[in-house]
Image (cartoon, rainbow, N blue to C red; front, top):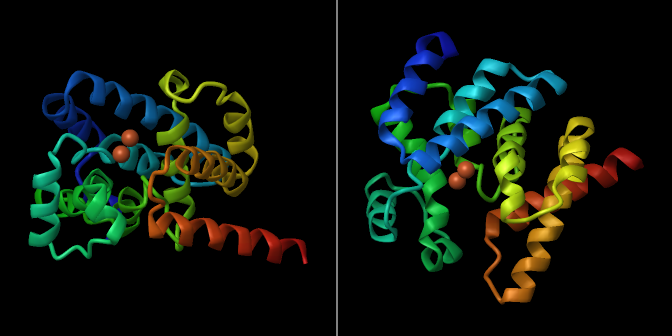
Length: 200
Ligand SMILES: [Fe+2]
Ligand SMILES: [Fe+2]
């Protein structure tokens, strides 16, 4: 399937403006703008990157109970960590809602949405662009602070920027005693393997 068979960027923008709360809409627009910039720097199709970014948090407003119910209905496997932190499921559940209710059939876009929270072991460049844009869009400084070095890094190397963010997140989870999602570990190990292999 190609993007031409999916809804247009304009129709997606109009729909999310109506369906997302104001804060979430702002985050989607900022993520989309940065996704275009990163896509252009790394040879990724900018329209598809923008589209993925606009819709990536479509299930973010659902309650834990609703996410667990929909994951069950859509037959999405639930990891131990997702059972403890159902909020993580908004990525996979969102991808399925986009396929079923939004007419989005571009599998690479759906995979990118599915991997936007924790990452995954088989991320395309589009998925990496979305993962980073979501984490480092301008308003994220409010939560993390000091993201400019990662923004600069992301323009040069998607993998190195993701590894930097993973390092921070691991430190944060270790400090707060939070569980580390299995996909997060698999994605980080995969990037480290690839980075070591490229230096051999
Ligand atoms: Fe999200
Ligand atoms: Fe997001």
